[in-house]
Length: 273
Image (tube, rainbow, N blue to C red; front, side):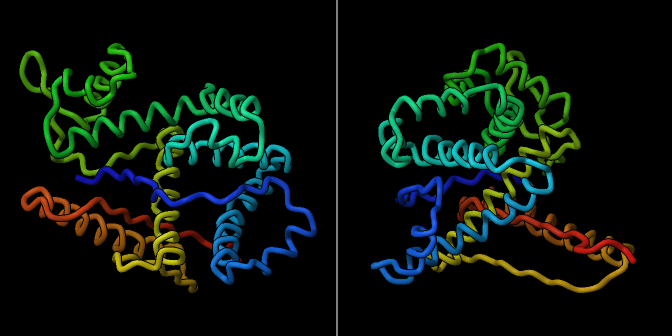
């Protein structure tokens, strides 16, 4: 069963520069620590190019882009690396009051839809390898009201992801539900978040940590008709999906392994002639 959930690598965080003036840009290539700091800056810049491209095409003003970057940076520091508000204030070079405002923005309704999808995915992941009754689920999500937990379970039942058995019920995974996908916009945004998680972890391991973990990053640019591209993508997806399901079933039997993630992306790079 494939339930992607990436835990961020708990690496130390460096100071965040929210505005880069000419002197700071010039100093990027002159770090006393040698090329390592510059490498991290180059890697981060390359990742930001994607956000800048989408933001510019969407017509988002730079001020709003900076605000979104602040929220993303806050979330990573708070939710993934577990920093306190005091530590985040020091990281941002801002007052605790300013950072508290960011905290309230992060907890606003802006993130509510994707958080609901992420919560349902987390339930599915918990039940993935072992059935769970209501008590176990409440213990796993102590901050979630019972009514919201039951609502999420009912949604997962209707979607065919979970199967209730017994009375009182114990929820089991649906052995035919190998993926947590939907055409709903909220679910697609959640899927985008998971895709970015896998991409970020891959880049961190390959370019920064350079550890021995098996990773892969390849890009192939070529010419193809829409028909040939669709056939190729179907074959690739079938191969990866089948291999992932088989590997996960082997893990269930042996218990040997760890959670991994594979993300696929393909698109035309130019308009048809």
